[in-house]
Structure formats: structure tokens, C-alpha cells
Image 1 (tube, one colour):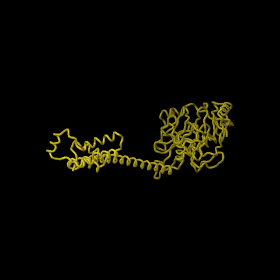
Image 2 (cartoon, one colour):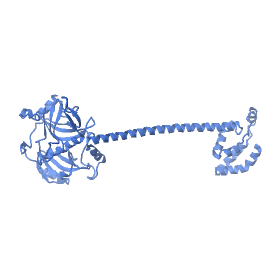
Image 3 (cartoon, rainbow, N blue to C red):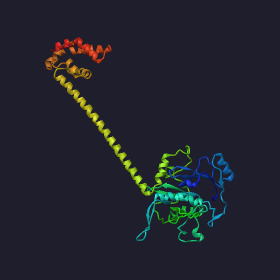
Image 4 (cartoon, rainbow, N blue to C red):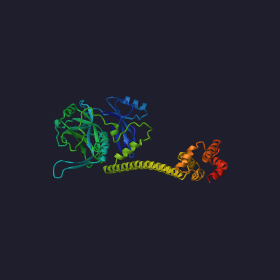
Length: 436
């Protein structure tokens, strides 16, 4: 179907998608935008290419499509003052600038008056459905240049005079984004009139309220079929919004949020068309769930995060305990070494100056062989014996001779066992006879 002020080149049948999003395409001429179709599995493809009729002629649009190997069958934009349902398809607005404005958000809200205040619940699924149904509103040309933004719900209250029903802005595009309350919001790109921009900038209106068709009455204007969910048909400037806490409107300078804040984002694929971004796919599937399931999933992820924190803390504790155990083990080993050497000194196996030699032999050959070389009672342990030993510094003890021969054997390349056997054969019998 021809669109107001936009040439369209369909690339895929829209029936194959569950929702749509408008985006950009790198390298495209000024005035070209892309309609991405989103399938049930979360993947996306280019469904249609649009071109601003004021910036590209049909011939220029077709030439560019052919140059990038896109389908070039074009539905030309309809002319000014064509009508459908008695409304003009194109309406010239004065230039007041444009900005993104939060229109409605998910949550449970109540009126502030009466014994039984009005209760409204909007799920994340409802917000996503509004964005999807926006494509139907555009395709069926419900509005001339976008859904109207009025003043204080004048039209909804039955006003018909031009002054009360004039538009402060037109909603020309929508986006779904996360919000500061943990839910999702529908943002609209408002194209402001001069008066609307002036009144918002002057602080006359501090809030925006959405005007929605409920699921029970929202139907296609061309087929009469139920659309099955809320449909955004406009908004109004007000100072008494039904939904509290939304971002105040700004008439200019408020551009789209950073890509990191979008719940869903669709760009020209950087890889081949059949390669999907797994993070984007998972995120798209997550936010498409009903709000109850979404909250359950968030709680599950929080629980998993809690388990991870507990495991991390347990690992840190175990590491600390292991280090403490190692320190205790080293201390016990040092204490045992000191005990063994003290015992060897007290039984006359070694002199205090022989502690390192005895420990080296014990570690190399074992306790039994060390004790054979350093026999118990080999040295007297009285003060007199220490004086006698000191008076004969040139005397060579039998174990010193054994160690000297043992080192010589090692220097010749013999193993510990071979060196010990050969040395024992040379001096062992003589050493034993001297010690006894």
C-alpha cells in the first residue's frame, strides 16, 4: 500500500514476521531508512526499504537499490491531500524540532481518587505489542504525518473545535527501552510544532500521557480484524499524568538513548544474514516474555548470581585455609628437624657443629644408614670431652673421612647408592670396629 511521503521497496512478505522496527543502514543515502522484521525465533531481516520522497526521487531510489543488489520494485509515495477515512495523508507542520519522549511504561498504576481507584496494569509484553502494532498503524495510514499529540486529552473528552484539538506534535516513530524502575517504556519520536515546542520549553506542560485503544476494541481499519493488544493512537501534554515517574518531555536536544539502553536494537548485520548475534537473540527472547515470566527469569538470574558469589567466597576461604595449613606444615617440619638433631646431639651421635652434615646424610641415605655412620655414643657429651675434642683440632673423625670418600665417589659420577656401597666397603668395617 502506498505510504504518505515515503517511497517503499518491499524486500520480504510482512506476514512472515511477528513485529517490526525502523532503523538505519550504513552507507545509505540521506532520507533512506529500513524496516526490520523480527521473526518468532528473535532473528531479524530487512522487510522493506523506505525513502523520503522529499529527498529522493523514484528514479534515484531505484538506482541506489539496484547498486546494492536490493529488490527495486517501488511503491511510490502518495501525493499531498490524498485522503483515507476522510483524513489528509499529508499535513505540513511548522518546524519546531524533534525529540524522543517517554510515552508510556510497564507496571501497575492506580488513580488517586475514589474509594475504588482505577487500576491499570501494563506488562512488558503490552509495551512490545504497542511497538509492533505501530507498524500496522503506519501501514494502514491511520494518521497523516504521525499520531497527534494534543493538550490535556481534549479530543478524548469530546472537544471538536480547532483550538482545543490542534496538535502540539506528531509521533513519527517509536522505540522500546528499559527504564529506571526495572521495566520497559515506549518512547516516541515527537516532531514538534513551533507552538508545542515553545510551550514545553516554557514549562507550561511537565508530562505526557498516552492515548491507547484497549485490546478489546483495537481493530484493523482495513480488515476489521482484532489487533489483539493495545494500540498507540496519540498522546497528550498534561500536568496531571496517570502514570507517575516518567521522564519529562523536552522539545529539542533529547536524542535517542545510547545503544546500551535499548531492550531491542536492530542494525544492518555486520556478518552474513544467517549469522545471528546470540546476545541480541537471547535478549530479544527474554523481553518478549510476559511480565510474570520476565520477573521469574530475573529472580532466577539473581539466584544464580547469589550462588556464584557464595562459591567465590567459599573458594577464597578454602585458599586462605590452604595457605594457613601449608604454613603450619612447614612449622611442624622445622620443629621435627630440630627435635631429631637435638636427640642426636643428646645421645652422642653428633657434635653441635655436625648438625647440618647429619641432616644431609639422613635426608640422602635415610635414617638407618645415617645412624650407622653416626653411631649413638660416638661422642662423649660431657664438658671434659668437649675440651679434649677442642685440644685436637687436626684429628679427623671417622664419619668425616666417610663423607670425604662419599663425595669423591659422587664426583666420579656414581649414584648415591653406588657411592655409599663403595665407601662402606672401604671404611665400613673399620669404622664399625672403632665405634665398638
